[in-house]
Image 1: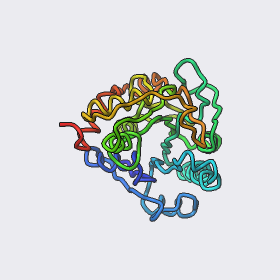
Image 2 (image 1 turned 90 degrees about the vertical axis):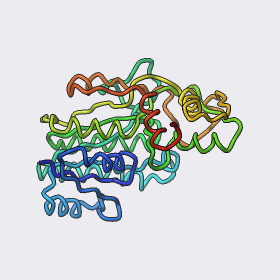
Image 3 (image 1 turned 180 degrees about the vertical axis):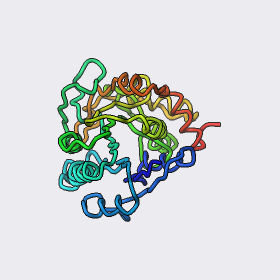
Image 4 (image 1 turned 45 degrees about the horizontal axis):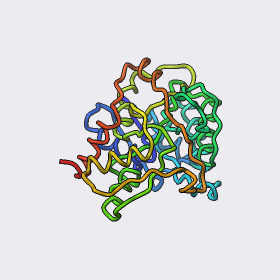
Length: 288
């Protein structure tokens, strides 16, 4: 029996794991920062020992990408130092650790999909702190543990691009959306399901890294156009360049992730992005 501690369970992936709980014969412990301080090593250790935890899925993260440029201390505390503590506890107690990371560990200047072993070069505080967390896991090396890098996460929960486009599309007659940043969206429910499906087969002596997003390739402009089309919203979407929408944190211009490793090693099927968007919009009641 897997006794699973899920941190950050109010986030998008955490909320999807909650919804999927009924479909798996696992014993879940869903926590938030209000009931478990993952920056406190003793708190984590006591919780894990008291509840016989043998698996941790770390969904906790500081994801306010632009705010992190100034709030460096808190971004580092959650994305780096807390991951270090989780890795230490996992190594000490022989706990399996699944940690969610990001495409922002790359600089986005590539010309072909990023494989796991490609050179990292984060261009933002968010990306740097997430990479620092990855490196601590690898250094401390809790066995049977993995890092999953993902991109453009959205769901029916929380704040994300899909929900923002739906709201603005109903409020405005036209919107400018960036067309020169290319990648693939990830429906959080697909990622959560993939994690739970591969869990029994994670059996390694070092920390492995995997990429996961939905299938396909598109720009934010393409994504916005399809959201409006599926939801039958008449707002006109206009393509703009990155320089026309300046942000404090640099975004990768190209963040397409190669998913061959996770598909081949765990024999999983990854849904096409349009199919997953359709499911999310139906769940939100935006598509009949």
